[in-house]
Image (spheres, rainbow, N blue to C red):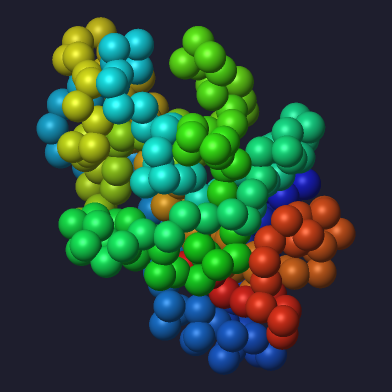
Length: 229
């Protein structure tokens, strides 16, 4: 994790548009926004005191094919650091078009290049996350993906606002928990920024990522490292 963060700081400090990388930059810029969002500048819609009540949940966010967690470079590095690479899988579910029409965010994800490249958290035969203990607790916590840390808080990038997703119907509203809600909202922004970091690092530093042992867990196009979104 530390080596990946250091690599990101080095690459992010460069003028990405400078020759000989101008056309690489143009291609990346065409695909996605390259400037990470500042969590302190993102507004939140609704109450930050609304927090998911996992203990009373009847529809676990980590159970079911629709709950597949797409990982990122930072997630893979973290699982590598804590010796849990057994959680990585390229076995991804297929979703019917009716569901994808109902879930625009899911549709964007499964049609992205990142869906083809990055692994997901492994699930068992009952579509439960393999990190889920019989007690219902996550065995990866606190070393879990940002997608898990932010759920069910989500981000609207264009509007630069976070909100509490309707996907989670088990919650309570308690003002003393605002700090926790803020932490989850900021994690939603960080999860979005991970996409930008991954796209830039795959385009500008594939050799360094390979040296860190991260590329072997991705399914890159035959031509080599490609931009993800």
